Amino acid sequence: MVNDKRLNASSASIPTPFLLVDEAIVRKNIRKVQDYGDRHGFAVRPHVKTHKSLRITRMQLDAGAVGVAVAKVGETQVMAAIENLDILVAYPAVGAPRARSLAKLARHHNISVAADTEYLIDELAHAAGEQAVTIGILIMFDAGLHRCGVADPGQLARLARLAATRKGLRFDGVQIYLGHLYGDAARSADSFKTINRLWEPAHEALCAAGLRPRIVSSGSTPSVFHTHRLRHVTEIRVGTAVYQDYFSLKFNHCTLDECAARVVATVVSDVVPGQVIIDAGAKALSAKQLLRNENLEMGFIPEYPEARIFRLHEEHGWVDVSRCKAPPRIGQRLSIVPVAVSHCVNQYDEFHLLMTGGGVEKESVDARGCYH
Image (cartoon, rainbow, N blue to C red; front, side, top):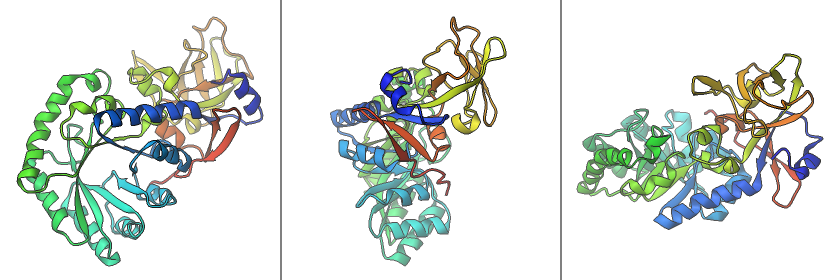
């Protein structure tokens, strides 16, 4: 990307470090997920926590997405700028202020919330009643990550019935997150057999109680193209897939030409033999690191695949270039695929969109810093 003549001509005046996103790759990635969903009869609900951009969201909706998933109420408020948007808060939004904010948004948008406790269901019902609105509920099913959600069929059915009978709420279905599947496990039929052994009794319990879920929403980028192995799914939820990142690349969940986002940095020092220092540190790349083959890696430089970013301070990055035949020199620009693109994007107020037709356009990271 960074060696492309049209990019060099368009971005020479942009100070580094900056976040670069390739529009053509983004559109290809969006299309790949949507085509998979269409082929298997799944609705597609992109998770905006990765790109945090109204412009990218509109691309996904134009491609056929039924709505969006968000991580926090703040992201919901940002995305509400899109009229009549169907929004799933794929996170237990506990706290009366959050519940009130969501109830107010439900006046003009279809709002649903993932929940795994009676406590949250009560809070949402109270807020919905105050605003005279209806909020949808997806009960969170624990497929093996053991972060949020319930796996016991009776408990799942009890929470679903509570959501179905509380005034101001509507039982929409079940949310599943497969975040524990990556690498070979994300591609293994045995992984899905294990999950189905847990999930099938829970689904049967819902149906027996007269609570057949209208939506079964499954998410996680590493395993997304194997979702058809999970029974009863109606919807796929993915975030990272729109940009991809070094984590996805290292575990063979994508190819390099599917990595749409790069941090462009400059070599600011090359005085130490076998090493260069870049102007992208933890603030630019995020401090997320990947332990692979006993080596810490904090990003991937496609122009120098033998190089290794092994240390980050706030404003500086250490790069081992001892294995490079012709290592980069001071003043040279490098492009870096970040380890965790969702973390990285949240470091920037804006990104630069490399347009399919040429040129670069500046775009806001609209939902940056939505922690609440």
